Length: 159
Image 1 (tube, helix red, strand yellow):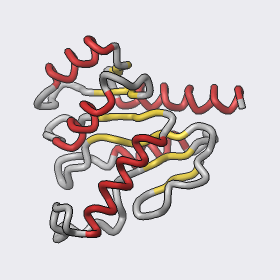
Image 2 (cartoon, helix red, strand yellow):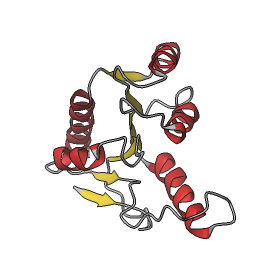
Image 3 (cartoon, helix red, strand yellow):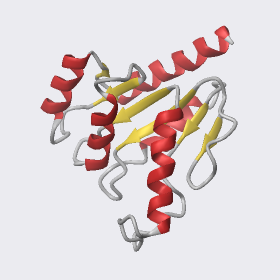
Image 4 (cartoon, helix red, strand yellow):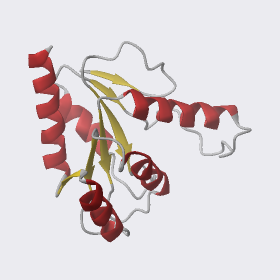
């Protein structure tokens, strides 16, 4: 398994890659991305983890801040280039950017996999959109991880 985090370039992706979209809200969301990395370690895949190690909360979230622009562009490219998008809405968070990413990929992409457990403030909306657009949805994070692991394993068998 290979992990790529911003600002590292999104190059040399393995045949199967997964973008870890979802709740990052510092203090409200557990570091589920690290747990996912540990789970996927035995698989031949690339994990695109947007949880930046050197994030600086003083960066202005505007198009005029080059650090912020670099982060958002990295995420957009990663979402586009990944084989699958693993989207986790953590209970107790609002995750507006995750909802934006969900909206970008729910209708027109078959690579989106979602987990939205009870306790997420807009679970009803997420459930209805997943049903309407036939987005794969999983009742727990571990079941979503298992699905991503199976996809990585199947990709390795095919390639």
